[in-house]
Amino acid sequence: MGWRVWAEKAHRLLVDRFWDDRRRVFRVYAGRRLRRLPHWHYWWQAHALDALVDAAERQGDANGPVRDRIGQFVEGLVARNGDRIVNDYRDDMAWMGIALLRAETVAGVASLGLVRELWAEILAGWDQGQGGVIWRRGDVYTNAPTNAPAAILGARLYAREGDPDDLAWARTIDGWLQSTLVNPTTGAVLDGVHLDGRPLSPDRYTYNEGTVVGAGIALYRLTGDDRYLRRAARSVRAALAAFVRPDGLLVNEGRQDRGLFKGILVRYLADFVSVTYGSGRSGLNGSGLDKAELDQTGQLGREVAGVLRDNGVAVAPAAARGLVGPDWSRPDVGAGDLSTQLSAVLLLEALARMEAAGIAVEPPRQPP
View (cartoon, one colour):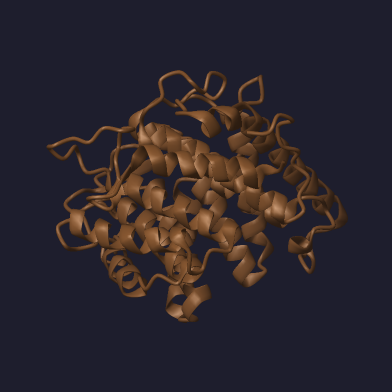
């Protein structure tokens, strides 16, 4: 049995344990039907929506139950958010915009108007002095978790609608990221910078490298400009060096918000693999890379595929039978948060997509 079987098992368990039929959103803790609403994890819900769209895409479900749930979910999101889609955090809105655009494109759930509303709010946060989209209203922090997803959203809006302004914004935002937060030699991504003169934040997180890679791949696919591919590869190498443990598994960043970080990383590492796996992959056809670069990039794609496969093997049995915690070497420990469960589901869906594309990532031997 292939990765799509493991992904389907994990998808069903996610819905069974976390979906709230009454509120039409996902609960943040497994199985808990609380009278009082917990803290509203808006950005977790964005990635839960992405996970549903992954399932619909994998199943070819244009009119079935997953598509219906996506439609219910979009309505529930707006209702739970106070009958509006925007909030004060532009990183949250970028995640939500990406997920809603996929819901429209893949599942046919009308949400483009919501995406455009979010995009306008994100661009309103662009700092006219030093550049970059400011993290939240009333703040001076300009960071990778806001700007890298915003660049991805702009690129995908251009791919969908063809408005050159969206592509121009995606390029501008990505250019600010590269010049401000990405180490030009190593590809490491720092978290952010305060516009009031404080030093750069030295913090590094899996999802920052992940979304910088995602922005590079999105822009490379649109433009064919090899600079974006080279930048993506550089940050992939930085992510592997910083966040893959000696046993081949991704680091444990903890629960709550941090429990979702590596699920985001694996999504965009899989995007990199889809373009670069092997020097003969079609994603590199027509690129300006010389033979040595082609070979190196293809080898990097194969290395990333192996890392994703090793992590999938570690996580799949737990995700198919129960809840998954933040440490993928002991996936049954510390489970119960939506964030850590989503990371596992996003990993298995990414492997299922890679498998469907003909990329050799052997699944665990024992079927679920």
